[in-house]
Image (cartoon, rainbow, N blue to C red; front, side, top):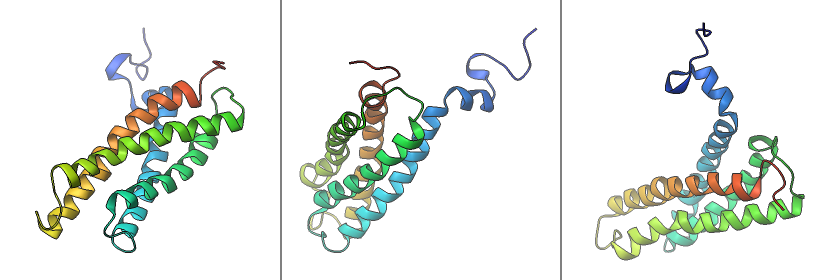
Length: 162
């Protein structure tokens, strides 16, 4: 008879699921932290020195969050994974993150410059909401999915792939 806390499939206990997916949980926690950094820097820049340049503000915010994310992912999320030399790992991390930056900024660019969700076409409040939804929700979710896949495949491989 199977142990009552060791259920298979989708009925597995939360502790069992967390144990099996520790790396993903850690990646998500790091992502939540870098999301806060990204959002804070983006809002600060967009509402001060880069007010007329929201895409530039977004790119700088993502760059700051990427540096924080590399350190946290390297030392915590993926520390049990195999080993590329640190310079090669960092190069791959920032290359993947550069692609993810474009993925992250694209919805904001579409919102502002294709859909024209900016003053004078919409109210200032609508512009702010559109910026937050496109940059911080849509862009972040798309970039997160890409990063998870790419980090595991190329940056922090389970075993040396080279």
